[in-house]
Image 1: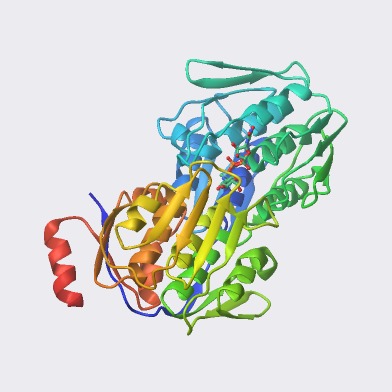
Image 2 (image 1 turned 60 degrees about the vertical axis):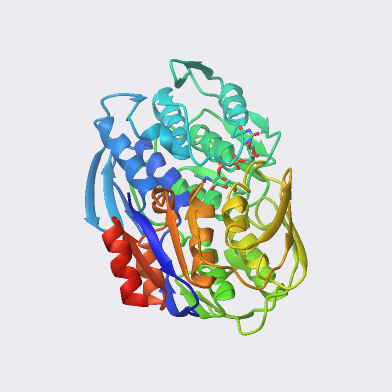
Length: 430
Ligand code: UD1
């Protein structure tokens, strides 16, 4: 079983190139089935979730040509099936983006019910409400979510909660519906805007993405496009917090600083220095971390996907911090693992009360999900002694070459596969 072996205590120093955003790449890949013409996508992250989605798309007849590690051409002119049942697809949340994309283009789709990280009840009622408002039937049968429409007609849809996935799915289907759709209480995340820009580059007519009202004029066909995916806000944020935890000096390159505002505001509050340029952010941390309070919120609020990373930092701070996750109700499962490193954190419902302890000590840990897994690795890099992290397949879902990028910053971390390799690592780092 693959694990990360870590020897903590080194300040991480240097520059790290941030890849394309996983959560933008997934809907953009799915949306490329909405044209018969060829689509070229660049800055694609080479992570497990995007690769699983691409494989499922190949399974229904999409022609894929990798033109580089981070670029792909896709052609969906010869789709052979509207049933997406690939054995791995239900493991990823974004499988359901093929529903909106195929429904929009073909008026029909069947997709294995989505999985994703187990971070709480992840309802899909708003996706279903949106599809039904456009005139589709939606039902669940034999583990598949199925949708069909004789015709799709634009509608006025008020989302009962702010949902990234539902906004994206409805935006895709509505792009090829007849007439105008308005989505109110829409999600404003950068990846929602990136998908809207991609669809518009294919000839869609979407206005207002990035605000809470999105207006879409349906078109009857979409054409090919060349598109570059935005940088990954969460990968960047994770490295920025790695600087904070290890008292390091890290510059994240190829980022959009505007997308990182809520993250850098918290880093400043807890005592880090931030230097911003057009497409890079430098985080320097030389003082003990201060406590603060955090509430995760939809964009532009502090992202739930950064909640574990800030919690592990606050566990090392001076004083008491309170972190509340308002988006997912079961996102503190990693706290038990952190406690084994010496953290003093009490979880009550969706709130964690953190008494900073000033130091962590290395331990054997298990990654419970993608972002918490990355946060535990960063905690290990800040801890005294050795840490082992297993179940790291979760981390590979959303971080490309995570340990290699950390190594380049001076981290003592290695991917190990056996007791022998663990011993070898321990001898090497002393
Ligand atoms: C996406 C991201 C995930 C991120 C989350 C919130 C992808 C692939 N995943 O997940 O990394 O943590 O946004 O930023 O982009 N909800 C409902 N009904 C619905 C849909 C959602 O009640 O139909 C609720 C959810 O249970 C949750 C909240 O709305 O409490 C937000 O979920 P949503 O924004 O939809 O998250 P995802 O799109 O699943």
